[in-house]
Length: 529
Image (cartoon, rainbow, N blue to C red; front, top):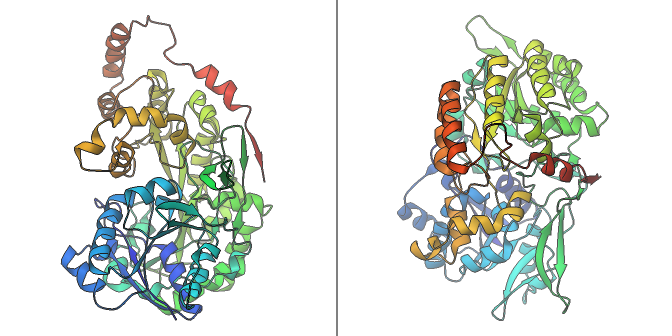
């Protein structure tokens, strides 16, 4: 029996901790079911100083300390890894999640304290690893889905296949996290009246994957888009993801029975009054199920007595819920059904309202479908929450005005995120050299391994600027333009465009980007299921 400590690093320090880390919670549950001893320290929830972390590390003799997270948690992960190395010199340090899978060799170089990494999906890998460590002479090279250190080299074990049936997974080990102390206190979500009044919210992950091919998105190697490339010696040289021109999508989702049973479990055990579905794209699953999945969830919600009924004081019996949607995949019928069964709000990744931009990024939507879905959702009685981005490679003054015009049409203002080339995305592959140019010398300046690590350390949730990939605007311009957009200062933007064109030698009426060329290039993309 192996003894493992999972540590959830800090992420989004500017926000309160709102979501139990489902990946770690599920791996912990899997390890427990396999007969191993498991403990969790949720640094993102507790946010304690190094002294507390050290006390936890030396409180037992761990066989493995497992750390995982997304790329934006890298700074916290780096700090935790060093603490583990000093406090537990005989313990294996394992790293997983998107932060490792997106750049496995580079991350192992940056974090020499890490003994091994989980590449891609870890549901089966975690059990195989812990079982191997239980043997007298463990040979980890036989465990699929790892990256290891061997004789001063970094090697990959055979690629791990994806889990076909998600219903095989146990429920996450919710009890190992500070639900009452932290997460219930941060239940409120500022997206709808019901979300704001939620007092006992918990999350469910109903699916894995998305049918879209957005250039800014990274799927963590869980949709069949990851492949191992070998060198002339037959050794795995690097991990590659689908490149522009051809994409693979392995869409997986829990059965409606599994989801309803999990919701009933959360209601009975924790008396939840709100459930948030963490799915990457809720509507993808409904389309792939031929429009039966969401109807099945709504039907089961009603049969289980979960459909909320409001009281006079604003509270309710039952469970409200929310998730994500997509402009071209929703329709009035399903939205109406969802509203009638407790869906309070849906987050839409509209990203942009200029058709020229939308055609280059793989959203599969356009201005018309974005506007239409917004009003469909509102009419159904669900609050639509738009997400927008500026700073696309082909962004220009006209496209910024189109964003503002959409706000006029919708009667809203949204603070856009900045286009960010996260590792693992098509944008990162395409603009890697430009990113390194922007961070030139930063690695040495801050005592890091290289300039790429400096970029990863700087990454946040795209609410602030990191690397800029816009052909027309620098970081200062994007920040200033966003500010003027949000104040509807069309005149200020018109004035600055005149100055900008004069500065760059571009006459009025001349195009400032190569949008048409990008659109024709993107039309060649094919997707295979």
